[in-house]
Image 1 (cartoon, rainbow, N blue to C red):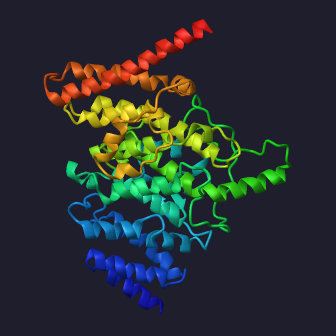
Image 2: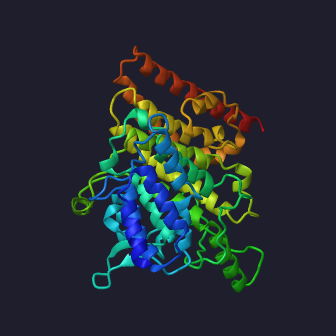
Image 3: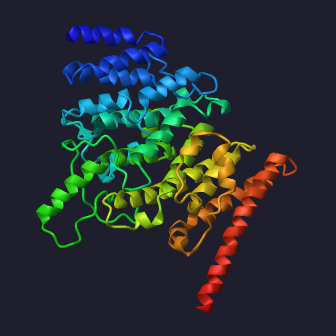
Length: 450
């Protein structure tokens, strides 16, 4: 029987895409969580996302407009409750199962954080350390985490950065939207499905509150300690239950932010690490657009829910937005200073404007982001306004407003403003900045008169 599963699996990998997905679905749904599935899983992941021996399944090149049937088949197979995730959850029946992700496939800045420390608590229980050198050599990931990290890394792969402007509405982009909406729901009352009540493969985490003025490597607040005066044992039980409810959200948030917003900065202190690491990851237009969806989604968390301590997920949601804003600042600085001097800079500018205007996305999901054109019209007609509730956000992220603005303006001095696209960019920027300055003047006047 084991040999039959192996032969069926390897045969299916050589079939045309749609037939391959049908056969793999049959194998996954009709095979129990045995050693053969455990052994085949990393080979399947490698086949999906490309390897030295495979070009992958074309997640970043297949679009609904050009390859409708392949697009729909891939979405069906890789969606949050599709066959791939059913396989991940089936393999989670063994809580000790781990797959090593080599450290050198991660972005350089993340490698440095993990090697030099201190690193976020999320990584504390998944570091694989060489017993002789005592160096971190890999991340030991459960099947779900292993898939999510490979999915995130696929976006920054240099070998896959050949997608054209027309391929933005790709399978990858649609799945990124789906994963954000499913694993990081904006409504804290909506649980992540399917429920996994008995999984014990994650260590409970409790840490002090993460605030915006703490460094990125400080311990993350993934679970709030019980503030009602309960005993330590009750706290531990509550924390274990809480992390069991949110660990998938935690993985998606941490992997997407750390990988998609990574910035490769090569200096004299890390040149040796650079020489032995993967090639520098250059941000593509597709990557910038995907990061913008991540920013908009984390901004869409309603303010009242983020501050509501009755929800166990609220601490993770608050930390996610704080971490995203801190990462996005450095990512945007890198983009503004390295992006080509042409009209495509509109992508970078829109990412920046999304970051500094969270009020535009409150109580609005990103489902329409999967459909180009529709979301732009809705955003232009958005009636959400800046008000006093965002004063703290602006204060905590003030460099994102001022320092990035100082970098953006000189670019327009070098552009032909008579060109329509360049003039439109400048008008868009001026419109946003004027409304922001008007609010600051009003706030100052209000404080003086009260």
